Length: 443
Picture 1 (spheres, rainbow, N blue to C red):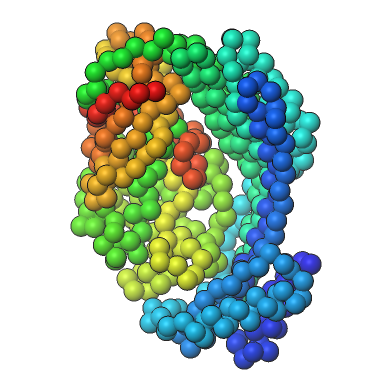
Picture 2 (tube, rainbow, N blue to C red; picture 1 turned 90 degrees about the vertical axis):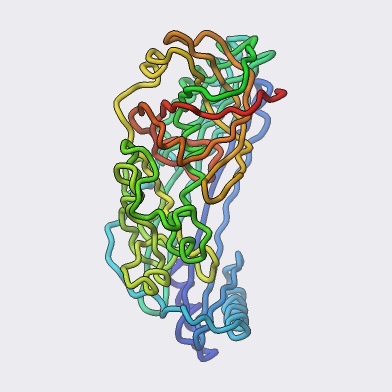
């Protein structure tokens, strides 16, 4: 059944129960994944799904019900559940009428080449990557996934917003006796991925970091590769939210309009950046506006959903989540401006420091000062006199983002980076002074 026809059934079922205001999200996905470990491909799986989420509005109340059964009876049942939940809920004084239709240019992020990648093609790519790692006497593990998704939003005010895109991801870890290396990349167009090059990078890291040294914890100049920048800096962007500020749970309380990072830090939220992914509208159908989150180290703009914007007397920015929710909004297309210094040049200019591939087990220590703890992994190196001289035992760090982003000495050109974060970002590598490592880990 076409998605437009599904919404027609939703609207008709709601009308039959005396409800005129209704919204529907119809989302679908199809993803296939090839997994390898111990230098062999051991899994190929595929999944496809389609679901409907219905939100009703009655007398200042709203609630939502969902189903993955899209026959007429199941659609009618989902509408009935949404209406029953709505009538049982408490009124929300901040609830706005459904969004009105808005114009926005579509984003072309669907690539047939990605959609048509076969299990055999993924297997060939994985086998070639395994061959690179295995030829160095190492063990390879990783995944190659490809898929497509769609997100369509309809409401009884006439909103009909559509987005469709593809996504490919390749991740590889090379493991030696006492060291490891890692690389990962993602793109809407699978032809932008180079599994052999990623495997080569991971293998070189495992080779260079073998027989790792142990040096004392302390404050060091650190070179964070893009994945490590994403892993750590990506922890703060849920706070660039008007709702979070209103609730007093953002580290930006009393800091908007003030310089809190170095003057060389500029951050945008830009759904239309060519290296980004995602829809050009939010979960209420509001077009996503580009935001200058940070300029010259100063916090300039934050995200507003419709409700938060109405309370503040400003226009919404198109960053709202599906209603009802307690989070409001957040920027999700982060672009941290870079520089023109390569990682090799950062290494060459460093008298003594540490090169970090990526981070993991990141946990927040101080929400207002944005201090995090976590560990390095899969490629941590000692830099002396402008050269990588050895691999290092991994460290635990305890680092504040305000301090870190005030101590950036150099940045590389930006790339689309993948890491531990739930969403990818466009970021540079960074050379940072006085990064705080608190202890050497046991592995």
